[in-house]
Image (tube, one colour):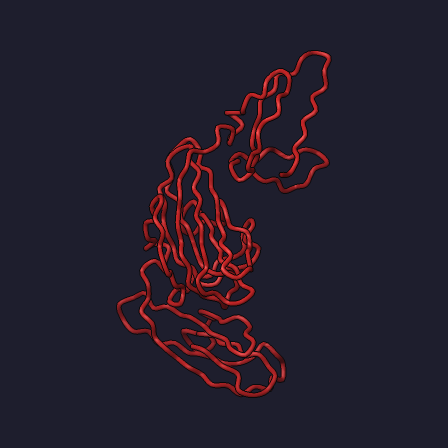
Length: 272
């Protein structure tokens, strides 16, 4: 259901309820000139719904047109019906118009998502998964978003893409698996609770860095030899906190050094 402002200066807000006086089942969030709400019926029987059009502004001045349409649901709009995504495959022109699940911000995805579609990826042991979303058509100022979860309903994500609001800007989430094979859940969409869009989605699997975990540090020798350029996204284990350092730490890459007696270890990392 979409409310489009035709007069006044207030912003439309559209909500769906199962019953009068009941809890809100779905909300458009605050719009500007338009506000759209989505409410799926995944069952086999019709359901009654009540659409309320108002505004987030007290003493609102607003006239509007209301359009109500029904689209077919897509199976992987529900996490329980996630679609398999395989290494090297690219899904073209994925649309979230018929999706409905919204996800909270997590890790580097600093904005809540719009509707997402779900996928599963089988990640072998000691393997890095990279999932890349390339927008085709998304709202101006929005970003694609990719999140990786251990399972449906997990309270937080294992990995997430950073925002990229440039036109057509691709985003990627990278997850480095541990010593056992794992099937993870990927949620892909556009950030911003009222936003949907169309995009391409692909996944690649590659061997994890040998020093992704503390148990397998890379030996840099007794003389402290300099390692080549490293990508922190290859890290998996998160170091314990140290006094006087920030309370949030990303996964790290690990190195082993033999420290001779009577010497002081000095290790420097330079951003490249």
